[in-house]
Length: 220
Length: 268
View 1 (cartoon, rainbow over the protein chains, first blue to last red):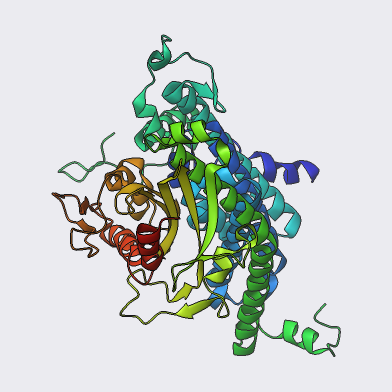
View 2: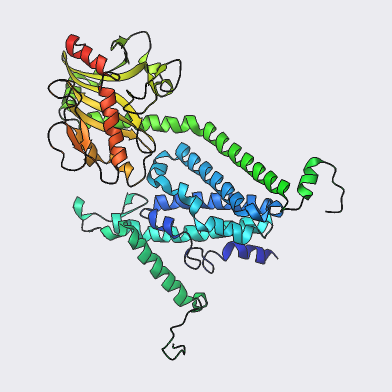
């Protein structure tokens, strides 16, 4: 029993990762991964909101009329996001300026609503909280990994501390401007998905629409 | 648990079928109530802390604005750091108000406080601020006996937020020394580009009024020419116009106009 509970926490980190397997929450993963500190703050905000939303929704799941189910879920999520945003503005002002709208956009992060609807609506509080934490950690792991590649290559620093001497300041390192642009995160996430699916072929989706030849037969 | 008789109204409410009208409305109302309370309490509890950050950022921006203005750093160095003088100006008479302490005056609160501000008729309200505070803080920098710089605090409505800025004027009180927007909530990536240093730099050196004394400064769509025109930002027309409107308003006769006229004729 304990191991199956723990499974809710560990499965979403690699085996059922919200970003690399479910392909959810990509937008913010592109936007906030130019530096490790923004990625870390965003991850913390998302984990908090996700855990809070899943717990709250799981608590009231038996009394949620199905007709207004999504509205109620979004209301709870949106309130938690505003609270997280306000807390950041009060206690990490500069970071909130750098993240600008992306904390607010956690509302539209499919990971949060996805876990509420798919898991917290049907499971007791304990597993829902673990599932939320697991998915939050899975999301955070990908964000931090992408940021750990983008920040050094794009600006020659780690957590804002210069590690590679920049050519513009007399060093040898010519930063890759591409790494500061959102498409680079797309490429990196794509490569990451490729690596994970090569190591774990069971993650490759079944091809629902195989190529059809003119004779109607499916070809490989 | 359905077998236990429910006597309390709460118990009866919970026992209602989930899809009944009463339960749907009740759940919606309760969720809204709890959510709204949480958000309001957080917002109000954290407001002072957030405002402290915003004030600190504003002061840092003022220091930065002053430091980047040409020649000003030398004046400040030559005369010592205390030369930046903060005064409160009575906007209607244009006189410096000596009865209120500038350090204790809350300009932000005065902007909406009915006791400290007056309603503005819409036809005069170029900055779309609704109410005009009676007193406004102004910073003066002197070079010897001459006025070197006047820094005004201005604000007005943009596309979807209130834009707040420092407007620095040179000693002739007509040439803009610099514009520095320190607070806005315009659309990120579009309207928020009014904070780009490149755009704010376009204002430096421009003349507010023409030779006849009429306020002439404006934001134009492409191809700004002459001393009274600034290029608008593509995709941020209403934010750019908002900035233009607030500069026009605050430099005009309903804003700091009377004070600037008095400074010009009488000196300080």
